[in-house]
View 1 (cartoon, rainbow, N blue to C red):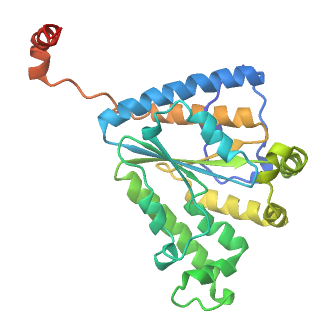
View 2 (spheres, one colour; view 1 turned 90 degrees about the vertical axis):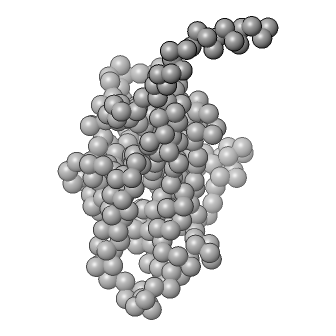
View 3 (cartoon, one colour; view 1 turned 30 degrees about the horizontal axis):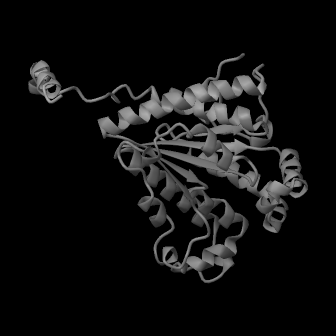
Length: 293
């Protein structure tokens, strides 16, 4: 079984999504991949306990991908070993009326992780340079100065948003948030097969939406905008990883392994040392408790 190296998936130079694989064979059965994921998930859970005691960092995991790319099941499987108090998931839908009264990043600031915890954005602030680029009329709902019609939304508008997102991520990483961003790279054919399964398997019918088919018509546009967003916002402190997603088990293991490997770079995350006075009298405290019996 081949090992997983995070650098094989990290975006450090401009990429072309059409040239990157949507499937990866490492010579392992599904059972083997599940065993490997179980192991790395357990280690991440233990790490979160240490992070909670250390109380200096929060971790933000950003997941993006086309419909059916496996975001929900990945979250369930990678983080299932976590203490429920140690991980929070936010699924960002269409902004509501209260959120539209603020700038587009406001609701994401509110959802950032507390120190010692993991937060997962299932769809993220990047929807503001993805869905809104495919459907620029959505921008009009933000009631922005100088934007009266779609014609007012210039290329410079999108360049500004990319810069704003980079600045947002720079700000939060400088204040103790570790940011890891994953694009689940699904092939159009695999999406077709998954949508068909939703229609053919009764227990998955509820997952199907006619909107999925409408958005599928814009596949090439989405790929173009994903590529541009990834290339413009993958930085040293907030990197993007493009993960082959046609094989769900493989994608889950890759994401879990990358998170684990990247967290090992933060050598300062350690359990606090016991207070010296307490340590010096530890036998006395033990005796006091034992005598209560």
